[in-house]
Length: 144
Length: 113
Image 1 (cartoon, chains in turn green, brown):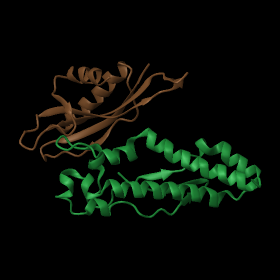
Image 2 (image 1 turned 135 degrees about the vertical axis):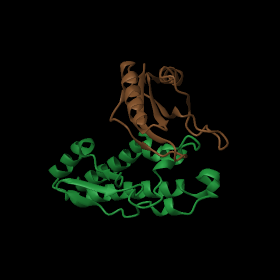
Image 3 (image 1 turned 180 degrees about the vertical axis):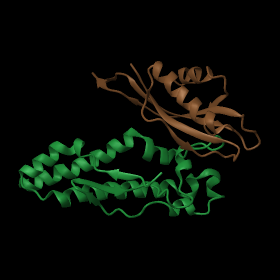
Image 4 (image 1 turned 120 degrees about the vertical axis):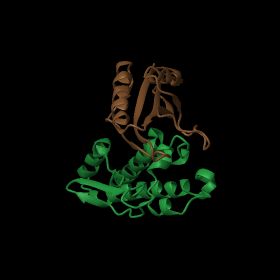
């Protein structure tokens, strides 16, 4: 399993991006701002979910490897017209915490990580935050 | 919908339990299912009332037989789909507490109207 990448779902934002394009906005910094802020939110929420109090046995058996495997590089990378940023656990590092999200037969899933990586509601809020950034940019370009 | 999910999984003849419910002192069964309810979101709202519920579960299968880990989960996927459950993909590896067992899981959805 590779890195978890947050990819900008351009389909969800096509209409807003077209409006900005029509206003002759420079889309790149706007897209990068929206994606970076989303990635920072997810990274901070992931770090909070990994606080000792939220781990099995309150982190008594934690060596910190899983926390170290959280991807902290929120720089946006472009692949043609597709922008993406890495969030979540880097599964190439030892101790990466996929099992904390799925749980094991002896260990319940970490509910905070589940909320971040498996919940539609959480991602809908992230998408709403990105939409707000695009709306703000549209208002700025329209002189609002 | 949890009861229906459990009923369907039990038709395979293996134990079914909630993820995380096997205690430290308890041996793993040779082969077994686990499940976890991730969420149950309102599908839509009209006139201030919810219309339908989207159920979201994880279903995992663990076994001492690696071939069974794949084949039973694949069969469970088909059986659930025939009963109206929505499953994308063919599953993923899940961690096992015991070196004797391998596990595979999948994410399953049901739209209850």
